[in-house]
Structure formats: structure tokens, C-alpha cells
Image (cartoon, rainbow, N blue to C red):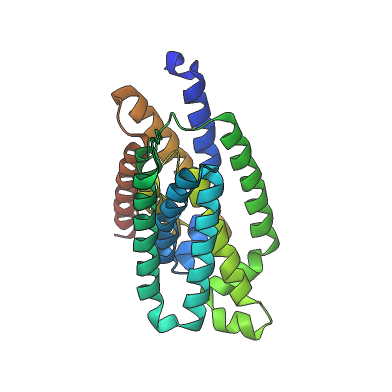
Length: 268
């Protein structure tokens, strides 16, 4: 264990895991309360198109992924408000097209040597110091926005019609929330992977909802659970030399099932 902690890449991975846990703990409960799980999945998979475009045009992968994620968030937010009855169809299209564009542009990039699997499934070797500073800055920004708009988010989550009647700009707030999801996806994709990130956004929030009653309590509980799952998954990945993303998700699934059984036993 001490040997692992002396390695810079593992130190970076643990710090990144803690920072990502904060982001997931803040954003995850809001996505679940607003029934945005499918929307978040569409954004996550569309981000891969930005990765492929960045490789093809020779620009920063972070910039390409961010542009794709925010574009997908804007499209999904617009459609879900203007054409609610067709939102699931459009999200599915954005989901599939984003992945397809990413694959094709990566195939067309001459001589690229980037391990694309690390973006899909995560890699503890992919996090550097610059990523850590970006994650920390995003956590501060996300915490500030959630604190400032907390009661608006609360109204949007549980009664959007009433919130709109009270003067809350629900469409803008909806777009802001999806933008937070998009940026969480971009920053966490190196560690957890785009394909499995949506599960990590969901499972801690699902467990927290069963143990606490307030949205703020759900966020705090989700941060704690995310921290346990991510850090624990990284240790498992290191000791058994397996994928970090898969390890985190399987540990989270085990924890979710265990907490579900504990809560069910308490009720009985």
C-alpha cells in the first residue's frame, strides 16, 4: 500500500477520484431528481464524438470533448422543452451519432497513437496535474452554483410547473444543470470512462435517496458514497491490475445492492 502511495500516477488518481466524487455527489442527485438519467447518458456518449474530432483536427482532446458535451447538452435541453414527446428519440440519435462520429474520425486520423479505450472505460494512468487543477476549479464552480441556485433547483426537481409560475427560469436552469452534467462527464472520463460514468452518476444518488429526505442531504451522502466507491475501486484496480473504471462501477454496484438490502431489512 505504501509503495502505491509513493507513485505519482497513483497519487494523481486518488486526488482526481476525490475531486470527481465531489462533482458526482453534487450533480448526480439533481439529475436523478429531474429524471435526467437518459439525457446524461446521451451527453456522455456524444462526448466521444468530440474526442474523435479533436484527434482528427489536431486540437486539445479536452477542448473537443468539452465542445461536444456542451453542444449535446444544449440540443437535448432544447428538444426536451420544445418537443417533449419526442425527446427520447432525439436523445437516442444524439447518443448514437456522437459515438459514430468519434469512431469514424478516429479511424480517419493518420497515425494517431492515443489509447481511445481509456476514454471509454477509464485509466488511472491518464490523469495529470493539469487535470487535477481543472477538476478542483470545476468543483468550486459547481458548489457555488448549486449553493446559489439551491432553492431554484429544489423547485425544478419536485414541481417544475409551480417553479415556473413562481418566476423561476426553468428552461435556463434546466440547461445549466445539463451543462454541469456535461462538464462532469468531460473531467471524469479519463478516470472512469464515458460508457460507465452514467452508472456512477446514478448509483450513489439512488442509495442516498433511500436514507435521507432532503436534496442537500442526498448531495452530502452521494459525495461520501462516491468517494468510497472511487477510491476503493482504484485500490482494487491497482492490486489486481485491472481496469479502474470497471472496478469502480462493480464496487459501486455491490455497495448499492448492500445498502438496498440494509434499508429493506430496517423497514421490515
